[in-house]
Image (cartoon, rainbow, N blue to C red; front, side, top):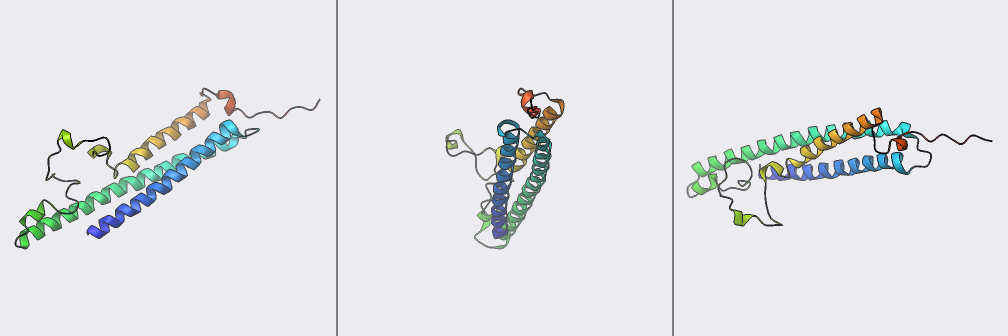
Length: 170
């Protein structure tokens, strides 16, 4: 069970890397199409926005399911640890202090302010198992706002959204 949870964390890190890479590529493509390309063929912009929204939505679903599975695997470990603590003599402490016991469920320790440092801290709501879903929700909203701005032409650089007309021959 510990190995399965560990492997799941590894898969989560890989998925996070893939999604971050794809999102950055799509945001870069949008920036290029809107602001940097010569002649600006802006018919491509909605395609990039839709791809970004779909990618972010898939990332959200994957992140939410990953978080659910992490919680389920931790619950399995907690139940196994409590069972082992009951059955094995001399391991009564193991039910509350097993591998992974510091994440999820009742905490066997008390966090004091002295435990918080600039490079070492933990906030349950911002845990690494929750961040992929949070990032994905923010990106879905970002893509929706950019798409709405494109559709309504409500943009600080609205002229950049309009295609440049080719010069007329004289």
